[in-house]
Image (cartoon, rainbow, N blue to C red):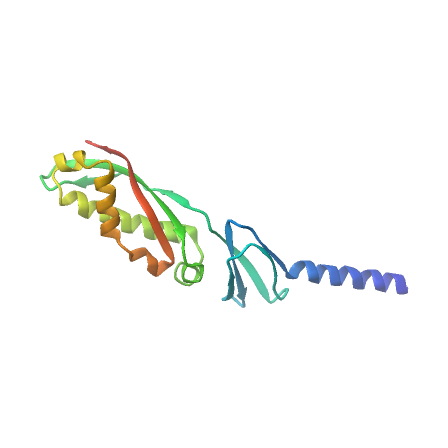
Amino acid sequence: MKKILFGIFTILVLTLFGASIVITNENEYKLIRQFGKVNSVITEPGLSFKIPFIQSADTLPKEILIYDLSESDVITMDKKTMITDSYVLWRISNPLTFAQTLNSSIANAESRIDTTVYNAIKNIISSMTQNDVISGRDSELTNLLMENIGNSMEQYGITLLTVETKRLDLP
């Protein structure tokens, strides 16, 4: 009987110990939540501990992410329609702000990025003639977009690294 109780006790202790370990990899952040509220953010790789069954650990990526915007029509200053297809390189710069404003959701972040970048593209291209847009395809258009967006995504804990145009054509 004592061996059975000792075995059960050992299994219980090992289960509690295993449930309290948090392993953080180099390419991720760990958010330790207590009753749904972010209690701490682990940014360094390694082992850490949490209180089992009271705290939970969520994972956010630390690496550079890519978001491919859908094609959209934009109108130039000389009233000519162009089709733009772009992508954004971004990363989470402040995991706590990201968790608080976007509920730790990559989908919510991509939705905000989509709206912000589309508006910037629309504003920049609508202030240029079609010839200027075509001649500024490479770095000039990217620089104008990044300047227009500015630091607006920092309020969400996001840093936009670049906005690149894959395709810019006539309809």
